[in-house]
Length: 112
Image 1 (cartoon, one colour):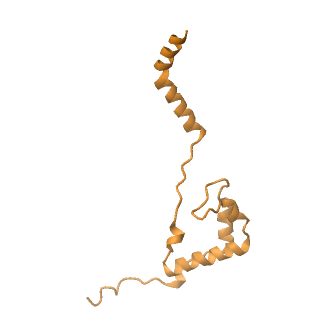
Image 2 (tube, helix red, strand yellow):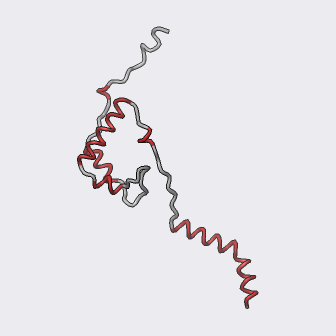
Image 3 (spheres, rainbow, N blue to C red):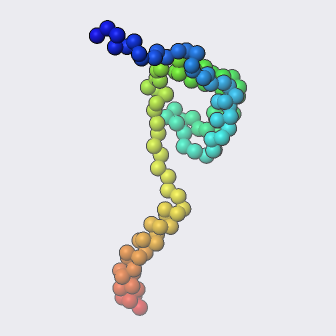
């Protein structure tokens, strides 16, 4: 068993590219507004308006995760929020009208 890990390169802390506050701020600025909130009820607009102190705290958190290779369970929670757009509603409406057209014609004929 000896010598198995001799050729395996071990991670070096100097190989990690650290995240800066400006990078976090730039990424937050590119996220579009009016999106669904996260699992804690926070929306994108709140992250954008938080300021530099929050960006530097996020940068420190990301760097700690990269250095230690551990992401907390709370940071991996997601929220799935289905949305209905106007196009989907229009397709649904047209499909419903086409499927129910014979019924509506018979109903209209009965009334007239």
